[in-house]
Length: 374
Image (cartoon, rainbow, N blue to C red):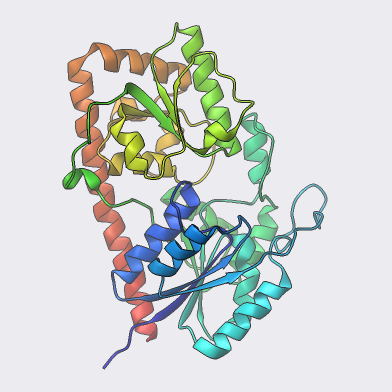
């Protein structure tokens, strides 16, 4: 009788709660694999801390939970950029090696290329990197968008060195997978992200509070996007909109368009039930825009720039605004035209259904590879 394959997922970000994109991705991929018979353990290198509620939630979700306290990050090893392993201490590698001697995992998946050092501890396992994003020259992408670089960024050569440690690299959208193939000879597959399609079995709890809304964390890309939207709305005379999420922890976020503020939400559905149409005024960046697919999964029509739909099969004009000024014009059209509202809602739901079907096939393929190891 064939046993279930055993997978260790290693991450510097928690899987719970899903109030930021990386946590939603980690939890979604784990849920998809476990639904396909893969036994998944989770090692959290607790760089973001861990509350008792988080620990309980993660322990109840994964087959086993391992918590490892982080080692403070030192200075940049390279001039002006982080070295590949600067954020992954050798003690974590040793911890994973000890786990592997005890549990004999068939595969080990690390989240982010800058955690790839861990894969050196498991030469007898199938080694996977879920990249989430492109980190080679990420600081240059940020600077080009007018954003002060933060978090991890390195050179393309360093990123390639990390990718080479894996047997399989996962890109979150096909454009990035193509770029990853140029940066490394390691095989690359694409696995997107989509939460469960809640609109198939639930309806909004009540009438919305606002016609438009934005939900986001306080990362620099979101801050830049919201500030640009605020400036465009203030110049256009303003429209009612709702702002929610961790982004409101930024007390220096003074907005001239005066959005309603919902604050942090324990369940994203609280926000989606409160708005008629979701906004994603994304400035140029990298990765899949988790807030876009989350809105689609909740059945909400969404207006956004073309950058907000990177990696998604966008066809409707509301999903491809050239810039934020054009997106504000589309907001006015949405308010004025019932036909535009109906068309956007239909296009958003069709995109959600098609993308979810594609993702199911991608997860089927990865699960089949893992079952073959067992």
